[in-house]
Amino acid sequence: MPSKIELCNASDVEAGAVLKVEKADLTLAVFNLDGEFFVTDDHCTHGPGSLSEGFVEGDVIECNFHGGQFNIRTGVVVHRGVTVTTVARRHCRA
Ligand code: FES
Image (tube, rainbow, N blue to C red; front, side, top):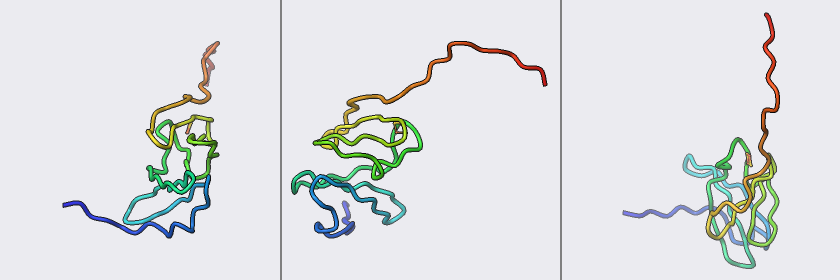
């Protein structure tokens, strides 16, 4: 049986903004896209970033940790963000 929890008031999230909400052992990001509200897990799927501390640009949230971008409406990855490639490896003696 589905249950509902009250996350915040609509007026708590300005248009084009995101709010971190911690409720019922969940840490969520609540987005207001011109009066339409979307809720995602606050934790970035790429790493330790917090999406509510990222940057909203239109329908996209950019994680402030590595710059990964996700479509807020669909959850689809728009940009994977910065990755590091190993170009050389050296062995060190202890
Ligand atoms: S932790 Fe979010 S893009 Fe890497």
